Structures are given as structure tokens and as C-alpha cells.
Image 1 (spheres, rainbow, N blue to C red):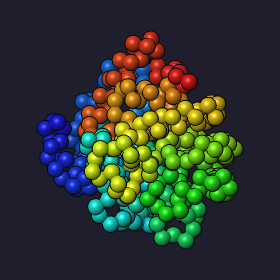
Image 2 (cartoon, rainbow, N blue to C red):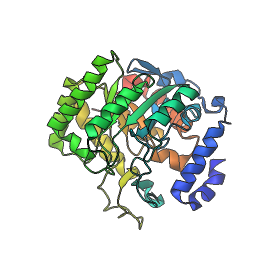
Image 3 (cartoon, rainbow, N blue to C red):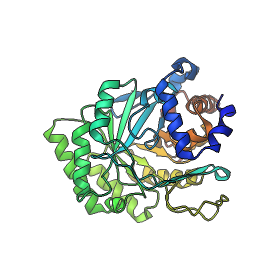
Length: 348
């Protein structure tokens, strides 16, 4: 069905097509049975105190305001991450702000954390409930005077309903946000967040989402800071400001974060570097250019315990998770591996 609809959807402005997809998902008409696969138990992953039915997650950015996460879970994803959510409602940057680079299998976005704000989103989640593992990605408002305080507000608001919370310091579209990759600023932020956890007697897992544009010298600093400050997993990576030279699309110079196939090898290489540095102390969630079982498996053997995708979902449609699961299971059978967890870091 998607292959028939795709030419129409891709004739629309990308944000219009996205809004149409969210509206369709809210109808919740597709039965979850359609997206189950044989031998899916081979993909079960135990992590963060949860049992994930499979490692294929939907990254933050698709369902920013928690409008369709239960419907997305029905499409066969092992987990869904909503957001980025800011304390106050935010309209984001001026349109147009999403660009398809079809020849490159990529997107560029400069959305700017457009979302309904944490109070509306929390009420929506409480009303809808959860039919699977739900992560909530938090960040600061663009015009805030205190980004650290905004992160703290996000944690205070969501710790009681999320399965995990992602601290997003990695978007290229909020000025000054990536400054938190600095070791001292990161220590200060994580200390404040862990203080809130202690005060509220919560063990909610905190995940740290990292930029692909950091220097190699920062990897050991971030890994060390995360390890010493109770980070439960590191998400590698967000979109990139670089890697435009070899793209063929005419709009490759548009400002914003680049995602999709051009990010695939960049993020996989970063997973390998962090995996060696972390030495099993903190698990990794791999993101960037996943669009097949092969690209998913490459990130697993590079050291990722779970995966997330976004751009691959835009290009492949509702059957994306199902197709990748089938392809992954076939790879595992070919390799003689009984469960995906035995493949983690196998290529290092």
C-alpha cells in the first residue's frame, strides 16, 4: 500500500506529508498482528530494567508531541521515543524546515523542537496510557535563560510516567545546546538531574543523546562523565552538520541536521569508539542511517544493544520495523546466533 501512496506523499511538502502521517496513525486502524514476525523471540532484549520485544525503536523527532506513539508501537517497533519535549509549547523555526534528499536517502531538518509543551504532553500520555516501552526525550526552550533548569523541569514532569528519559544535548538546531558536550557543563547538568532523582526517590533511567560532530578527544571525556554520573545508556547519534560534500541532491546546503544514509557510517564508527571506551559499563543505542536488516546488524556488532531510526521509516513506510525484523532474524540464523544480544559488539 505504501509503495502505491509514496509518489503522492512525496509530491507533498515533507512537513505536510508528516502531519498527514500522524493524523492517519491517530486513527489506529492497522492491527498489530500484521506487523508480527516469526521467531521474533530471537530479537528480545533485556535492558534498562525492561524487556524489549525487539531492538528496533523509533527515534525522537517523529512523534514530537505524543500524538501517535501507541499506534507506532503497533507497527512492530520494540519501543518509541517521543519529543523532544520542552517545558513550554514551542512553534519551532520558520517553514520550510524539512527537506528530502531522495537521491541520497537523507533528510535535512531545522525544526527547532516544535512541540505542545510538557504539561499538555504529559496529560495526553496519562489519558492514552502505554502499550509498550515509551521513552521521553527532553530539551530546553529556545528562548530560555537557563537551559539546565529546563532539563530539570522535564525530568520532574516525566519521571513518573516514562520508561526512560533522554537528555538531548545533541540537536544542531538550538543555539548553545551542544555546549553541554563540554565535560564541566555536562557534569554540572548530570549532577543536577541526579539530585532530582534522589529527591524524588526514582530510579528512572537517564539516557544521554550525543552529537556525531564531536571530536575524538571528547569521546573519553563524555564516556567517563556518563559512567560516573549514573547515565543508563548513551544514544549515538543525532543528526550531523557535516558530511555534505559527497551528496548529489541540489538542496544539500540547506541549514539543519542531516540524517539518513549519509550518517550511517559516521554513527557506526562512533558506536565502535564509544563501545571500546565504555568497556561494557554503559550500553549504547545506535542511530543513524538504519534502513535494512544489514545496516541494523552492522550497528549491533559495532556495539549497540538497541537501535533507533527515523529517516528509514520516512522512506520505507509502515512496514519498516517488520521488514527489518525479518531481515535481522535471517541474518542471525545464517550466523548461527540464537538471540540478538549475543551479537552485540561481535564485530569489535
